[in-house]
Amino acid sequence: MTIQTPAFLSAKNVRGAFGAAAVAAAIALTPLHATPVFAKAAPDSFADLAQKVSPSVVMITTSMTVSTPTQSNPMFPEGSPFDDLFRDFGFPDQGQQSPSRPHHSNALGSGFVISEDGYIVTNNHVIENADDITVAFFDGTTKKAKLIGTDPKTDIALLKVETDKPLPFVPFGDSDKMRVGDWVMAMGNPLGQNFSASAGIVSARNRELSGTYDDYIQTDAAINRGNSGGPLFDMNGEVIGVNTAILSPNGGSIGIGFSMASNVVKNVVSQLQQYGETRRGWLGVKIQDVTDDMTEALGLSSSKGALVSEVPDGPAKDAGMQAGDVIVKFDGGDVADTRDLVRRVAKAPIGEKVQVIVQRDGKEKTLTVTLGRRETSEDQPIPAAAKSQSQDSDTVLGMSIEPLNDDLRGQLDLPSDAKGLVISDLDEESDAYDKGLRAGDVIAEAGQQDVTSVTDLQDRVKEAKDEGRKSLLLLIRRGGEPRFVALPVK
Picture 1 (spheres, helix red, strand yellow):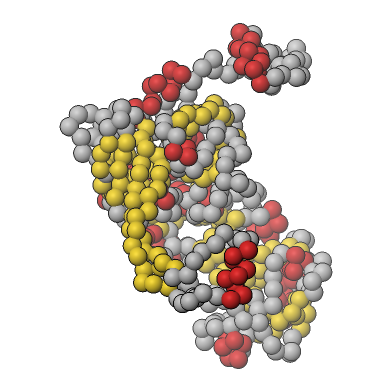
Picture 2 (cartoon, rainbow, N blue to C red):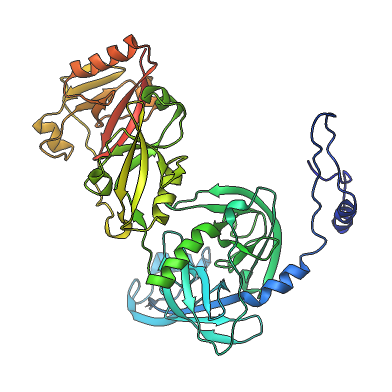
């Protein structure tokens, strides 16, 4: 339901129109048997909220020493006629550079105080590589800040200032309670304009940009350069996000800003306070989302959960987890998808036992896993696959395939005991191609059974058809990385 306003409003009349709506909210027209829906009016003002939280918002200035070479030849603006002269005739010592000359570079960002004893949250990219960090408060005082810890994966940093008196601070709110359409207010120092406020709504939830642990709130509240690290408030004055990034073709706000959700930030900040670093739980599996076509092939009732594609040495393997298991519950909570599982595992304490429920062969199985630590267990990069050059192959489901041999293992940089079928070519009109399979991929399993010959794969296809299944689940390895793909069997 939207507030009814005149079709045409001038800029000076918009506020008055919304003020009128605040007096009498429009009611949706509904059938008599339905529950009426009331539109909640916009706040008359954000002034009380801004006055309440402003003393806890800070401006952060950093400086760092950088070295850049100095040019021995003159520099001209691009397009200058002198630039043509320089290119055509040159100058003495053209192209030579004098030794590097150190100079100071300054950066500006925002932050907010979370405790009366001086802990301050900001973005990692605001203070990264800084030699000196200065915090300016709303009352005009400044203090030097000490870096407590950073988490580049969520772009969060924790600072500390020494203080003789309690500082005004703001609490974290529950970002999971925020709904699309809720009012929010962003505060910070956009483009060096100290302690500015902007208001808007939550435009979207659970946005993912580029990080493993991303959980961004999207907002149309104006966020610009300099707002980084500043708070996004709900109407109770609680921080429900840390302003981090914007989507913009010109570097300025176009109404698409992103704030890291407070429920992610709270956990990170707690670990940085306690350890000076993050200590995330580690399950030790490679996972992928369950797609709709995989649901039928796996005999599942829904596409929720996280499909285990590989179980290397680690906590999950020690607990008996297997490739092909679908993790549906972790530590008592339902698992929606891979992102959900990653966040749940990251929050879980390392070294503690957790119950993990998986679906295997159509039945639920409970495993007890003692979690490791993610930061000390990161996987090493795996080389990319090479394309098979062998011509001795058979065609199945639009793919030309052949068994692995020593020559192919060498080309694909696979271990000597690797088994499976190599895709040497495939029809670009095939379902396999549409699903992303390419020459050089290795089929390790079909129907959750090992395949080492073309006959094995043909038998799995026949079994799927005989059992009335519409698709066959393949375990594919590319550059050593596993993933499941469900191919239609026609």
